[in-house]
Length: 231
Image (cartoon, rainbow, N blue to C red; front, side, top):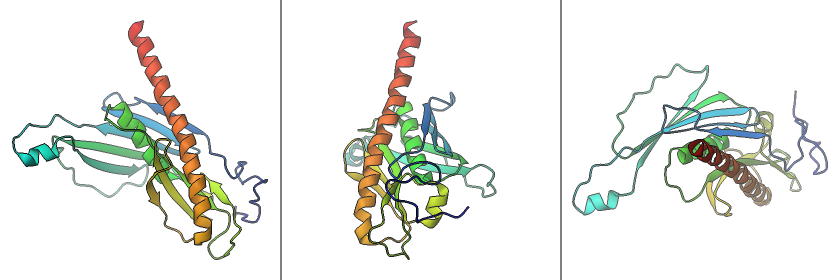
């Protein structure tokens, strides 16, 4: 079904029934894989991601200035797998003393894939007990008109699905916590500069709302653990 880009007035609905500034349903769980140090399962609409984290293992103490500079640092390895699309073998590397391995498995794709991976990885890292200053949260934002349309008055969109990403300019933004400081910004499509500011503002606001959802998931899991240990 082709995307009707003429029906994106701020008062109208998108093809999936959402308004321009609505997130899709987000469902998340942590501690889903008992064998991993940390794990999560996350759904953003029909995009579904499983993430596991292993490490870091205890580092060996060594003397010298170089060792002191390395203290508190860790190497991060990320592996992404797509269900049903295997066939490329990757060389398995040994894990060092300060290596955190993040494995992401994509079960279903329907837009905002990078954002979903970042959010799932954040939850798995929290579950693994990796020290973090805050949640790294991410979402997408787009524009209601293509670059070729050259529409300076095009409205922004939040949390694009796959059909929208195929036909509209969009970006993926990631923020650390509730701050408006952008930590991740990825854009692989063209858009007029006059539209970029509104897209970014909508994306940052969306990140704040995603953070509240993820924080609720972590706190609910913590309460369940406390209840289990006290019973």
